[in-house]
Length: 385
Ligand SMILES: NC(=O)c1ccc[n+]([C@@H]2O[C@H](COP(=O)([O-])OP(=O)(O)OC[C@H]3O[C@@H](n4cnc5c(N)ncnc54)[C@H](OP(=O)(O)O)[C@@H]3O)[C@@H](O)[C@H]2O)c1
Image 1: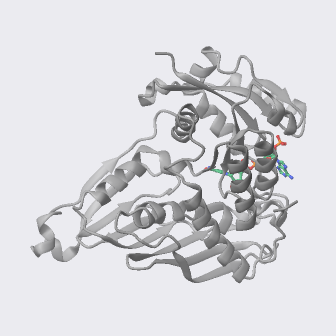
Image 2: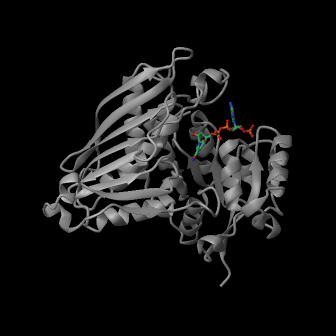
């Protein structure tokens, strides 16, 4: 049977739009996918030469992405000098938004109002009010909307959840997760989106989606969790003096009756490497390597007393390692396939990345941002505008 082919409209020509587009060009068969396929129908930029250069560079892409070029996935790609022209293009099935986060709301809103399905980069938006407006518009227009938390769709994410649900580890009770990146912020220019407050700079919004994802998979989605509105218990931020964004954000979230997550992001420190996320369970720990956006290994480690022969040792007797080498793209192809399957099946929402779960995490970011002392504390959202 012919695969169901999805035609993407790419918004912006920046770093992550490039990475995502390259993954669209990888042969789905390399990951065992035959039901869906991807084409790039349009690229929108603030300038036509930039959109055209983006397409030309993709056409010259070496390695695994050359498959898509040779298979014609870029043959009909149109270069537009505005985003609106992509939203209006009848040949576009779904719009991918890869602009800096302060523009996500306006860009996604315009696409949804034009009747397009939308996959929007993380963090979804700047404020829960913006997200709620997008959800309402998507529902009203009967179109698909999802936050591009690509980590959730990687094979390792499913394997971690399978291990947690096997019962072998017992109930999870605490997650400690660090997604830090020594970003050499002193060397960056003032207009770099990582540190520019006008472009949503700072550690919280850029990095915390990745420490959050593992707590959501381990605790929020745990079959025994009954708390759908886990709340932030405490938080702290370290402010980067040069422009007032948060250099570091740390916060604790509690799932009533189940457990807690302590999440840390830092732009000015090297991260924990082989224990970036520790999921402490009754009978042992599940430990995930850095980087939490695309880890390649996790381990199941017995508690020390279990090794000595306590009752805990019945299920976990020795350390076991699980590896997921990333060889068939950058890792964004899995979320793209998921979106394509949702669209093929006429779904308006993903069950793997539900809008309610995006709301939960966006709510944590609002609490930390508004309660902290960064330049984004009083950010004026664009909902209703
Ligand atoms: N999923 C992931 O792993 C991942 C990784 C990195 C970033 N992200 C997310 O993706 C988004 C973009 O990040 P990025 O690193 O790709 O950023 P980037 O390289 O700076 O690219 C952003 C693009 O947005 C467009 N843009 C529109 N208005 C802009 C403005 N006023 N200033 C600057 N650029 C503007 C530009 O494209 P045109 O000139 O073509 O319009 C620009 O190239 C962020 O929200 C970030 O959190 C996700």
